[in-house]
Length: 85
Image (cartoon, rainbow, N blue to C red; front, side, top):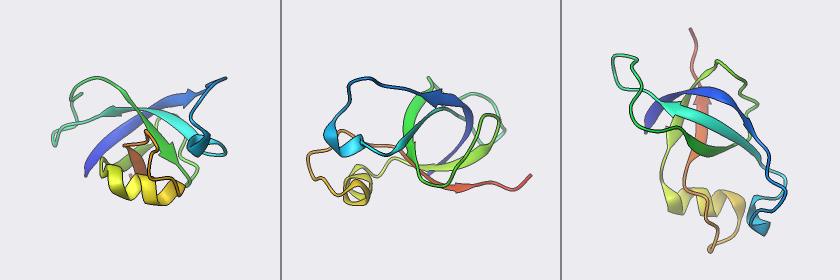
C-alpha cells in the first residue's frame, strides 16, 4: 500500500473491456514525508476521489483483477480509501 495525491482523471477512448465503467485517476505516489515518489500512475477508483485528495493505493494486481472481475485485466493499481486531512 502507498499514499498518493490525485492529480486528475484520465479519459480513454479505447481501453480493455474489464475497465469499462471504472473511473481512472492519475495519482502521484508520495513518500512517508509527503514528497513525490516516482512517476504518476493510473488507478481505478470506486470511491469518488477528486483532484487534490490524498488516497490509499494498492498495487495488488490480483486483488484489482478480482475487483474488476476479469483475470486477464491489465489493472494493477486501485484506490482503497480516501485519507482524512
